Structures are given as C-alpha cells and as structure tokens.
Image 1 (cartoon, rainbow over the protein chains, first blue to last red):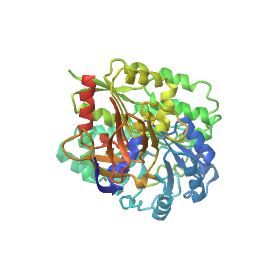
Image 2: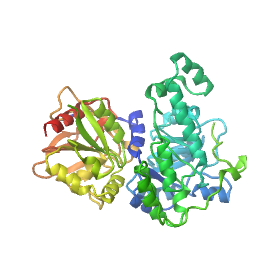
Image 3: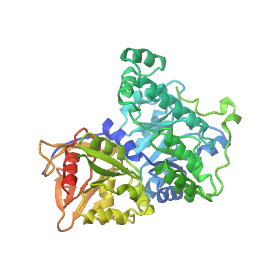
Image 4: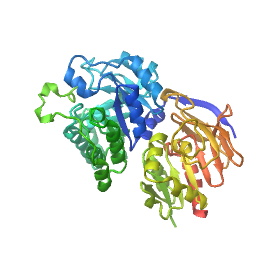
Length: 299
Length: 192
C-alpha cells in the first residue's frame, strides 16, 4: 500500500481533465469578490475574474486588457471553485503573469483587444491550461494544436443575443458529424480546407466529438438560452454579462445553473424562469456594425 | 444480466463514468432526479465541483434517497468531488451526505498547476499499480473507526478509503483507460 512516488504535473490529461470536471456546469464572469461569492453560492462551477464584463467593455470602448492582478487575487481568496482569467490574444506575457498568480485556467479571449494580429499564444509551453473561442471546427482545432485544453464558442459577448453562439455551436457540431462519415483519404483534403492540423481532424473524426471539452459562450442571458446551447450539444455554459447585468443576479445565476443541468426538462426550465426580473438589456447582433463584432478577432 | 449503475448527473464528469461502465457488463443510468434512482444496484458520485453538485443535490432532495440507498447495502462510490460529498467534515460549510466518517481537505495540493498524475497501489486491486489522476484534488486527513484506508501517496497522505460498500477516491479512474476499479464496483453491485 504505497505509491511508487513518480509524479507528473501539467500533462494533457491533467489540463484537459479540469475542463472535464466543469462539464454540465456554468462558468460566470465576475468583477468583484462579492460577485464571485454570489456566483459560488448560486452553484457556479467556476468564475472568470475580469476588470469589466463584456457589456461594459463594449459600452466604454478603449483598449481592454488583462485584469488588475489585485482583483484576481481578491477573487481567488473569496471562493473555493476554480478561478479563470482572460489574457489578450497573442499576449504571452499577460498569460505568464496570470500563470504566476495561480489562476486555474486562462481564457485567451477575443473579448479583450488583441495584442497580436497574426499569432496566438503558444499554449502548450504553459503549465496552466487554456480555453479559447472558436466559430467553426477549423478554428477550434487550430487552437487545440497550439495547446488549448478546452474550447468554447465565441458567440458575440456582451450583447445578450444568443444568435452567434448558436451559429458557432451548430457549425462546429455539424462539421463534427460530417467528418465522422468521411473516408480516411477525404480527411486530408478536409484538414487542408479548414486549415486545421491533420492529426486533430483525424482524432476528432475517430472520437466523433471535439478532442477537448466544448462549452458555449457569448450572449447567453436566460435559463432557456443555457438549455438551448446544451441541447445543441455543448458540454456547459459560460455566462458573461448576462448575470451581473440583470435585475436579480443571484436568482438568475441559480436559474441558469439549474437549466444547464436539466436542459431536457422544459417544465423545470419554465419553473426556474418565473419572475426572474429584468434580463440584461441587450443589443441585437443584427444591429451591430461588422467592426463592432468581437467574434472576428482571432485567426 | 447487465446491472444498472446510477451516475449522479447534476454536474461534472458523469459521462466519463458512464463510458467506463459501458465498457463493462453494466448499464449506466444518468441520475438527475431522485426517481432516476429506481432500480439501480449502485451509485457513482462523479468528479466535478462539490459545491455545485452539493447545492443541486440539496435543491432536488437527493440527501435522504442516497442515504437510504447506502442503508439498504447498495454500493456507492465517490470520486474527487464525490469523495468530498460523502465526507462527514470538510472544514467549511457546504452540503454533505455524511456517509463516511472521514475529514477531507479540499484543494489539498493547491491550484490547478499543482494537479498531477501518479501510480498507486490500491488494496484489493491486483495487477500492478493503478494510474491515478489528481485534479485540484482533496485528501483524507482523518478517518473514523471502521473506515479502511485503501491507498496512500508516498508521503502517507490518504487518497482512497472504504467502509463496507461505500468507497471514496480522491483521484479520477474515469479519466484513465483502466477499468479495474469500475469492474470491482460493478461486481460488488451485482452481488449486493
């Protein structure tokens, strides 16, 4: 009754494994320790520590950067659930700073202003795992090739309009279904077409799913939105502005958690949706100018 | 005959447990409501976030039905968050099942970058060391009378325990390709 003592840290199994523990759960954007406690009390599986939620980034404009380390430390001290934080696309020094703070996951996020218009962070070299956004399978597999241990849809953050998250999740799931029925020789041409690493296209075809955990994000504002994304095949939900920009954040957070667990039970989704108060105001995606869309960031 | 094993599916890696059971002679049943527990021969409480699962367990009234299942002699196995939920004491206020007389420390190794893999000898599991994946893992700090220690890390830290047909592991066999622990649980459920 003893172990042989040999210990391996930061393996792919361990990095991807934490995302597997978050499945069926809701990861909530928070900007203060108080909000983090409300999120944890409501049943959040993790929190994303931010300086500003996407709706405020959108409203206030300017350059959006990694949060103040002091804010992240406060939030880490306030909760026992995993704490994630965002770095700018390609900003590997922000990523190193977040790693040194001991965050549990880094989101290399299009919600912040990109720091590099060509390269993403080389994520495999980090000890901490990364989550990245995608609009389609090729983008997801490129990020996994760079070392992402978890994928989410980009959606259109800070709008409260779920249409882009739906578009991205439908696209990814449809592409995953297509490759399962391709002949091995067709996968070579397909990998080239979608600009994805061949071995990851082959792996996804073999598995019949994304090789890592795949969450929905961007515009989820109601329990029904959360259940919709689960029905489309995602593994869990990120909810950004939708909770703390609403009338009763604690109650809405609990309701979105319950709808994510019981996504097939419409009566329960109805029950938790009653008297939730004002949802976040929202901006219809169709009213956004192309340059106002965040999902186009990332390459 | 294939035996029905419930996997508590409120949050966490219940699908991974289901896949392991599917490789054995067992029928996994995702348990989201207490009525889903009808006819199960054993229950697995998966990895995930123990605060999330605990709150939902309380919200949907799972505490008594799960304690009744244990009382009736059916096996129950908690992995990581599941181990935490089966404990008597975790040093903070959160919903617990209090099925095992153990004191558990959550996130005992630190943050995610301290998560690790190692090989463990586990009492009752033959065929060599077991691949163990520890993710923001808890450890058992103290065991009460009658609780048997099944495995320790090299420094003596307790990471697997048993009392009768109740099991807790701080690690995640469901994230490995090794079905030995699941097979032994299914066998126990079949006999119970």
